Amino acid sequence: MQWKRITAVAATVMLAAVACGSPSSNSGSKGDTNSTGGAQVKATDPTAKGPAADVDGAKKGGTITVLSDVTPDTFDPTNIYYVDGNQIGKLFYRALTQYRLDGPDHKPVLVPDLAEDLGTKSADGLTWTFKLKQGIKYQDGTPVKAADYAYAIKRSFAHDLYDAGPTYQLQFFLDGDKYKGPYGPNGADYKGVETPDDNTLVIHLAKKFDDLPYYVAFPMFAPIPQAKDTQKNYEQHPMVTGPYQVQSYTPGTELKLTKNPSWDPNTDPVRHQYVDGWDFKFSQDLIKAQRQVLASSGPDADALNYSNLDVSLLPEVKDQSQLVKGQSPCTIMYTMDTRKIPLDVRKLIAKAHPYDAWRKVAGLNPTDDPPASTILPPAVPGFDKYELPGLTGTGKGAEDDAVAAEVKSELAKIGKSNFELSWYYSIDDKISTQTTQLRKQMFEKAGFKVRAIGVPKAKIRTFTGDQNAPVNIGKTPTGWCSDWPSGTSWFPVLFKSDAIALGNSVGQLQDKALDAEIDAVTAKTPDEQLKEWKNVDKDILEKYLPVLPLYYSSTNSPIGKNIGHAINDPTQGMPEFTSMFLKQP
Image (tube, rainbow, N blue to C red; front, side):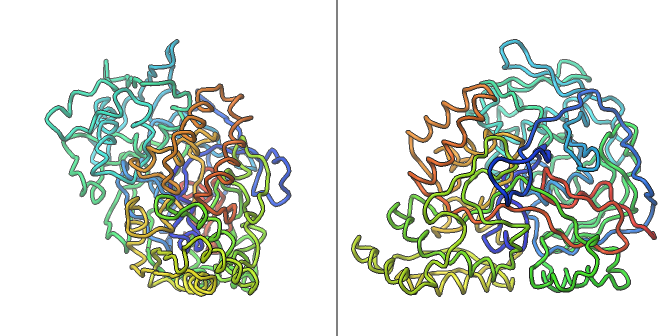
C-alpha cells in the first residue's frame, strides 16, 4: 500500500509511503544476510470465525497512550493508505477481510472479517461474490446493510475528494476509468458493484484481479451508510464496527477512542477490546517521546511510540522487552521527479548523495534498517538481491572531495551547473531539519543549487503527496510497503504512467516501453510473475533511475513497561494495537 513505513527517518525522507497489509513469513530470503525477513507467502483461512483467541494473561481496563512524532493525514476510511493510519484504523474500522497473526512468529493469515468468506470467483475471473455476516451493527446500534458496502466502494471512485487512498479499483474494477463516484448526477448508476440481497456483495471487474481478497482488507471496504456520509468531515464522526469508536479527533494533534458498545467479539476473528480507550497524541518530539516511553515513569509506563528507536537512545535501553522488533515488507527511497530532472542529472545526484552520513544523522540502526540496493524488499516474493554500481545505499558521496569535484565537473560538461534541487522538509522536526542541512551542504558542494522548503510537520504529507508540487525531490510515496505479497502491488501502481494521475507515482515516470513491460508481467500467472519482477526491478533502476534505494525498514519501536502483548505486525511493520493490554490496568 502506499504509504509508507512510518519511522523517524521516514519522516525525514518526506514520509515514505508504505503499503499496508501483506502476509509474510520467516521462511528465509535468498542471498541477503542483512534481510529484514523471509520471502512472503500467501496464507489464508477462509473458514475462520470469531471470537479471536484470548491472549494469555490479558487483563481488561485502562487507557494506552500513543506518543507519535508523525502525524497521520486522515482517518477517513476511503483515504487511509499510510501504514499508521491502517494500523490505528483497525481499532475502529472493519473491512471485508483482515489479517490474523498466528503462532510465535505472528505469521499473517488472511481471514474473513465482515464477510463470511474470502470471496468466490467466477469462471472468467471477472466477478467476485462475497457473502456478508449478518447482525453487524454500527456504534449507535443501527444495522449494517449490504448497500453500505456498495456505497463505500462507490465512494472510493470520488478521487477528486479522496485522493490519498489506494487506487487499484480505478484500474481493475468495471468502468473504474470512467465512474467518478456517488456524488454526481449519475452517481447511483455504477455497474461495478451490486447487492442482489442483504447477504451478498458482488464486485465486477474489467480485468482479472486474483488478489482481490487481499485488497478488500483495506479500510476503504469498511461499510459506510450513505445517509451518514459527510464527505470531508466524515472522519470526525465515522460510523464504525470495530471494538472502539471515535470520541474526539483534532487533526494533527490528538485522536481519542473509547469502547464501542455495539462491537460483537463473536463475529470478529482478529480483534480484542482489552483496554478501555486509546489516546493518540501526534506531532510529538521524537527523542523526548521515546525517552519518556523507555523511562516508563508514572503514566508513561502505559505509553508507546511506533517510530523506530533513534540510534542515539540505544544506550538507554535497559530492557530489550521494551522494544517491539520484527520485519516489515518495506523499502524507503529517495525519489526524484523524472519530468523535472534529466536522467544524466539523476545519475549525478546518486553519485553525490551522502548515504553514510545521512544514515548517521537520520538515526538509523544498521541492524534494523540495512542499506537497500533494490526496489523490492527481501520480504516480498520475487525479491532477488542485486547491486548496481553506486546504488547500494552506502557510500560517502560528496563528503569525498574527489567525488564532489567530479560531480561538479560533470554538471558543467552537460550544461547543468547550479541545477536546482528542491524539496519539502518538516521545519519543526529536528531530524528532518538536520538531514536537510546535510543534504543541502553536500549537494551544494557538488555543484547543485538547493531550495529546501520548510513546512509544519502536521502538514508534510499534504505537501509531499501532491504529484505536481513545485519541487523535484521527495514527493510521496518515498517508500513503499507491500499491499499484499506480490510485485503486482508494487510495479504497476508505482511506476506506470497512469500512477501520476492516481497519486502513487514514484519518480513520476511516463514511459510506454516500461508500461508495456509491466503489463506483460502482470498478465502472467503468479508463479511466472515471481521470475520476472526482479528483472523489472533492475530495469527501472538501470534504465530510468527514478529513485535511490536507501534502506529496508523493519520494526524496532519502544513501548512502556506496563503494556502487554506488544508484538510486531509484519503486514504493516508496526506494533499491532488490537491485542495489546495493560499488565496493571
